[in-house]
Image (tube, rainbow, N blue to C red; front, top):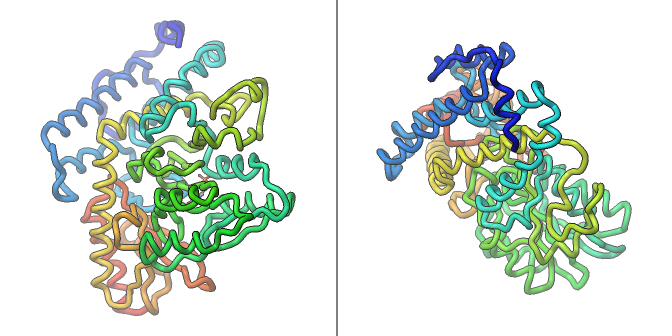
Length: 448
Ligand SMILES: Cc1ncc(COP(=O)(O)O)c(C=O)c1O
């Protein structure tokens, strides 16, 4: 970026220095952002300094609770007492990400010339950072708008012909199955469903189910990695190994994966992987990841093009074309910085420890059925359960009213998957999980 951006702050209204009380901070931002860019940078540096000190003080997080996570919790901007346990659709941005989003929109407000001339240049640094975060090459990373876009780009961009087969599970998200339904209608490809057990029985069972459905016409397995109805984590590594031995491509729909799991594209080995970093990673809505393995790029046409589509020998050719909000790209970079300060392995450990605590509590409530595998390899931060004789929506409404705690219903009665889905992200405490458990136990006792 050029210096003009920084110099343009000279005449800005003086911002308060140092940390502001939370309420004042929100007021400042909502009042039209009187904070200067320098003040925003200072706020972010202060937050990262706190995380670094916490890391030095608490080398190991042995218990799921404690001062470390209490402090991290304060780095989010929730309305008073809101307990946010649904990271589907969108999760929260931590303070530094929101600050950065404001900062770059502020550049646009003050100097659109800089925005279109210089801000796009910072995109590559964010791509590099994201690539490092998932152990991929920057040449394999496309910065899409969301998971749905990434999945559509793959379904649309592969040369498939009438009679070719696509394997999916019975629990695909509408954003994952509909691109294939469109392809089926346009080109006559055949979609075959391989059902998942509820809950999954194990890695072998899943891999064998797909292996048995492969025919000489199967071209791709397109499957939920973070299964939105059950919270299952599909073993993409084992699935890819099996599929590749048979010459079949693999795509993972991991809408929830970034920021929930410590991801390693090379180790997992699949060809395509789409994710939405605004669910668990803390990025703003409207920025996504499509990973396309180097070897798979020659098989995938770009769909939305401008100049350069035929001369770009890497995944940049799948990026959305035309103008976009560069502020969101920079905010994704900040979300990665935030996660890197905490450490992605530490984040996964915390999320899984909270999920295990929740599952343990649920298993003690009579009549509760958990649809999520208990094996931490096959599950993450999403847990889905139902309680015999109790209406799922009643539980959702009850805990929202009583504790200001947000969860959601998911699945369908007809398919036998209807459940309450709970997210256990890093900012949730076991005390809050206890509230949810108390609410469920209460309704189970009264059978409503
Ligand atoms: C498994 C799965 N796939 C795809 C999507 C669609 O994600 P997005 O709306 O971010 O494109 C979701 C949304 O929650 C999801 O859970």
